[in-house]
Every structure is written in structure tokens, then in C-alpha cells.
Length: 378
Ligand SMILES: Nc1ncnc2c1ncn2[C@@H]1O[C@H](COP(=O)(O)OP(=O)(O)OP(=O)(O)O)[C@@H](O)[C@H]1O
Ligand code: SF4
Ligand SMILES: [Mg+2]
Image (cartoon, rainbow, N blue to C red):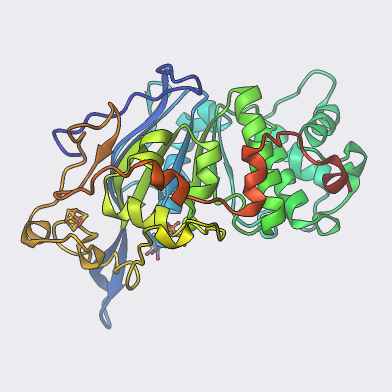
């Protein structure tokens, strides 16, 4: 963790500073690589996550975005303790859970849930929907008032599914409906934090907005905090009050939604915003488009200094020799931190126009908050 880092105070949807629910400091995961014959030994490491600082406030939604392979899922799995960190600290509700044992984790285990990308493989095909949603209550010995079945039926209704489909199997549902089952399962234990790892990426574009809407409803009405992992800045824009941009295992920029979308400073954030799909409009031709050359470098041998330098159009010698600290740049709002030696100028209102949403997601901006019962009820 860099010395000059100040973690941004989480804010709720009204912009008021919220109490911190989760914070990670210097979170690191290096997957060892073994080689050699006949005796295998460690020959290197995949530096999947390398010194991440992040916080999520009570009831807050934080987006974590970045290209494939930059360490988003690993971060999510570390936070939910599905993976053991190599280094760093995870604090949840004032408790250090970094290396907590299964037994020590038990009291908070139910409060932190995960929703996975693939609604097909994350549900057991041999179990009924009722069994799938009920099982977290059974494992944690939770007996809600009126019984578990009643609670499952309420959850099905809450996520826009027909409670009568309690005895159906996952294959009898569409992709969007299966993801709703995943959401109902995550809600079964009344969590305080949900780590949603690309929850809509596997879904048809026309269904994505409905599921994002559902998650938004859950976040706002039930006050559940979210770490929403996505490739795409367009999706988190509607859902997250703060956004963290990740590149090759590190957070390169973090800030409130307006700062990230309207006043981005890191070249990588500019490139991600520029890559958001746009629909043709009269002024499309005037818009600045940034194309990132090549792929994300290997996390086994990340570039020295700034990890983005091999693809950055502003890179200079200093970028190879000194790692830029994640700091608040002059002129930026409190909590808007950027890791760059030669940041871009904050973009004008034009950038706001530059970010054009997917047509399906546009429905969200137009206030389409109600779930389309016709499509979702099977
Ligand atoms: N169990 C593992 N063993 C070794 N390397 C791993 C393991 N899990 C992930 N990695 C590597 O760590 C890096 C980060 O992976 P991660 O899945 O966290 O990225 P991501 O940002 O979620 O990517 P995507 O957007 O494709 O899901 C990748 O290079 C990946 O190959
Ligand atoms: S530190 Fe240098 S290489 Fe890295 S993003 Fe900034 S200008 Fe580009
Ligand atoms: Mg992933």
C-alpha cells in the first residue's frame, strides 16, 4: 500500500459519507507457478492481484471494471474468502477476516454472498429451484418465520419469478431467469454485501437491463452493499455510486461516478470510456476514440514502473522506472484517486456524450425500474 494513499470515504446514493462495511488494504494474490524435473519447485508467480486498496460502505454499490485478466474475479474471490490472500488485509464490519478460519468466519459468512457470471454452471442441474434457494438456509441452520419454503416462495416473487415454479429444475428457465434464481439464492441469508462477478455478461443484451434493474432494486430497497464486477463501464454507470478501474492487478483510478465518467484522468479510464459501444448520432464523427493496442501483458512478468506503459500513448521514461502512486490529483474531488505520472486533462461535457450506452441499457436511464413481468414470469 502506498504511503500517500487516502482511501476515499464511501458514500451512499445521496452522496452522504457512509459507514465502511468492507475495506481491503494492500490485497495481493500471487498464484505460484511450479516447474522443473524431477523435483518441482516454484519458478515464478502469476501476480493476479497486487496491492489493491478498496472500500465499500454500508449499502453502497462500488463498480470494479477492467479488461479480461486484470484480476477482478480474483479480487472478488479474495474478498469472499474463496481464495486465501498472499498478502494484505481484509476488514469486514471492523473485524480482520484476512486469514480467518472457517469457524471464525461462520458469523460473517452468511453476510457476504457472491453472484457468479454463468447462470448455467452455477446452479446444480439436479436440484429443484426450491432446493437451490433453500440450501444456504439449511447449511447455516436458519429457520425463518413461517418456514423455509415460505421464505423461498417470497424470494422467488421478489426476484420476479413465479413462486409456483418452486419445484422446477434450472433447465426449465431462460438465462435471465436462472440469474434471478442466483440472485434469490444470494438473498436467502439476508446478506449485507454481495460480490456480483459479471452477473449479466453471459446474458443476452435484451435481458441484461432487466437483471441490472433487479440488482439495483435489491441494493436500494434492501440496503445491500455491492461490489459489482464488470468489463464494461456502461453497465456499472447505472448501478454504482463509486467506480474502481483495475489494470493488471492494480487499481489505477477510483472515484465517485461523476468523477470517473465526466472527469477521468487516467489514460486507461479514458480508453475504457472511449471503447463503450456507441450508437450513430450526428456528432459521432467528432468524438475522440481511443483504441488500445495489443492485449493486457502477462501478469507473470508485468511491465516495470507503470503497468499500463506498454499500451499508453503518454508514456515517458519515468513511467518505466517509477510506479505511479494512487493519489488525489490537483483539481480532483476528494476520493477521486489516480495512479499516473502524466494524467490526461479531465474531459469536458463532451465525454459525457461520448459514453453512449447499449440500447438495452438505455431503458435504465429512462426510468424503466419495473421488472417486465411478462418476460420474467415463466
Ligand atoms: N487459480 C489460478 N491459478 C493461476 N492463475 C490464475 C488463477 N486464477 C486466475 N489466474 C490468473 O490471474 C489473472 C487474473 O485473473 P482473473 O480471473 O481475476 O481476471 P478477471 O479480471 O476476472 O478476468 P475476466 O474479465 O476474464 O473474468 C489471469 O492472468 C488469470 O489467468
Ligand atoms: S504513468 Fe505513464 S504510462 Fe502510466 S498511465 Fe500515466 S502516462 Fe501512461
Ligand atoms: Mg473474471
